Length: 259
Image 1 (cartoon, rainbow, N blue to C red):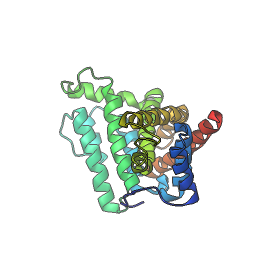
Image 2 (image 1 turned 90 degrees about the vertical axis):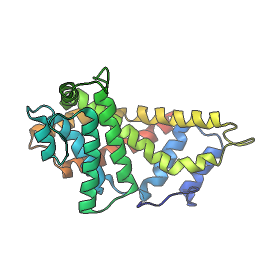
Image 3 (image 1 turned 120 degrees about the vertical axis):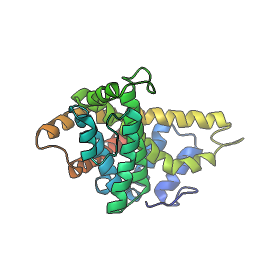
Image 4 (image 1 turned 90 degrees about the horizontal axis):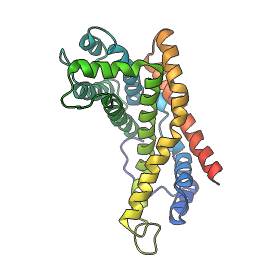
């Protein structure tokens, strides 16, 4: 994938089908599934992407670190550069910077990796932030408690689902965003900007609903591997690989059920 930036979608048969679905007024479920199928060969295997591996690994390890007495020390062991009493924002920022340093060290920066890095930061901030009534006034102790709460079976499942929903939406948007804009106007798929926006919002919701499949297995996976030798980056990569596969299958299933 590298850093290529798409204009219109590629001209292969699968991509032409995506364009035909958009222009023909197909439901968002059909467009999402067709895009996922067409993009498979152009996406780097998530289990081999260093930024995906590191971001997912940090999502598994930060909640564990937050359950330790010396939270800041444990974060530094993970490669996060934080002060002695880090806030949630500081932890999220440090995680993003840690992924940057990791990729700079091992090489292999990709668009998929950057999407994973951003999605991980957003998910950690949003899911942990739900436990903080006022994010900017929350004490470091409350931020640590909120992050530590993500280390349970049920709450890690929520975190993982949020992450993969955001990442899958970004992946689809990477390919679709410019093509969708070509279909706005009189006698086009989207007669108004509002119609275009409604479709984008429906795609957001569709990815969130499809990601329910991730929630069903991720919490138990986290618990099992945490207590059976711990989670390293290779395990995190394999988890991501399985999650992406399940998401693609779910997108196809929802298309077929809709049909």
